[in-house]
Structure formats: C-alpha cells, structure tokens
Length: 278
View 1 (spheres, one colour):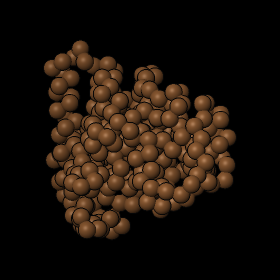
View 2 (view 1 turned 30 degrees about the vertical axis):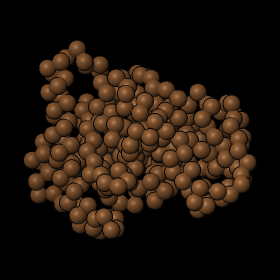
View 3 (view 1 turned 180 degrees about the horizontal axis):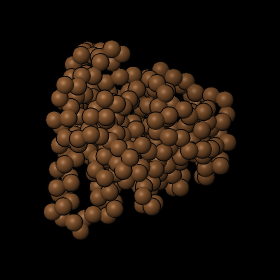
C-alpha cells in the first residue's frame, strides 16, 4: 500500500470539500477500494472516509418510496422488515450479496459508485427505476450507470441516498460465480403502475434492461410470455466462467424464474393481507 493522506470528515460539507481535491478518493465500505490499495493497483494522494457521516446511513419510508442512505450496509437492508415488506426483490438482492463480511462492511453507495459489472445493486436500481440523490443533484438510475466501472458521477460528487419506488411486485434471481459470489447473471423484475421493468447485471459490461421481455411481460405477466424470445449474445461478456451465449440463455431462464417468484410473493400477500403496506 502506498502512503496517502487519510481524512475522516465529520459532516457532508467537509466531505464534499475534501473529495474535490485533486487525486483524493472517496472511501465507503472499502470492499473494493481497500484490496486495490493493498495490492498497489492504484495510488491516491488522499482518502476521504465517509464512515463517520451518520447522515448518510439509515432506511426510511418516504411516501411511495423507500429511501436508503448511501452508507447503509447491505446487511441492514437485508434485515429491514420495511424493505422486505415493501420491496421483496430488494430484500432478496441484499440478502445474497457476497458473504457476511461483505454484507456487514459493504455499502449501497460504495457498490453503485464502483459500478462493478457483476454487482447486484445496479440491477435493483435500474429494475425499480430508482433515483440516486447526490450532494449536488438527483440522477435517474437509467442514466446513472454509463459503462464498465463508469457512472454519471462527476469528480468529487458524493452519493447521499437512493430512493426506490415501491412496486406492485418485485423479485431478484442470481446465478452466482461460486468463488466470488458476484453475479454471473442476475435479473431483477418489477411490476409497477407504469409497466414491467427487467434489469440484468453480470451479463454485459454494465447493467441493462431486457426490453423485449419487458414488452412481453407487460402484455401478460406470466413466464409463458417469454416463450420465443431470445436475447442477442452480441456484446455480452465472455470469460473463463461463461460464454456470451451461455449468459444470454441464462438471462431468459432467470427472467422466467423471477416472474414466478413475483407471483409467489403476491400469493403470500393475499394469504396474509395484514403484511400489505402499500
């Protein structure tokens, strides 16, 4: 690890000032950045640790949305009854991230700012049509992830929270890479008042929407609606774990399974109407 100037600001204003300094890097949970620093794969003049900023932590219901602070650990999202009741798919997603160490240290904001192509949260954000709120503006999830490890964040811009609209139904399914537990392919499905959204992670250089499936499921929210559909493998990832063609097939299979999970959640609600909160 190279030497660097370590800063732990006590408020967001100080964090913003520090993060705009040349060659300073923001640290959230550290699940990706710390290994990079330890292996000397990157060198920064300073590290701005957001760990003391309680204003960036927590989960709250805000009207028709669930707002989750950027420094909220995955384990807290997974343990939240509010999240499980309102957005089952988000609860499933957070519960399956990495291992207990990653879930206890890793944060929502750190995950989306890193924009790893196999990370789970990007599928949840895009699948739900979430909004990323930073210290400067609000960014629609559809516009936030711009490429491989690339986002719409400007230099020094800090994620404050993510607002997830509460859908009518949602579910997440993942085919894990067994060693890393990242998504070889992950699919998030949400049925909303404005239509069906299907977001895919792990299969391409960045999260993307499976628009043909969205159109088919918008007409009939049933796995049978996907029969005859095929996802073009062109542009998808090929590595030692899976070919692009394998991933394209897995996306379709997981989409069908995730729709079934959505129906299971709906049946559960009908049998236990007191759990409904929307």
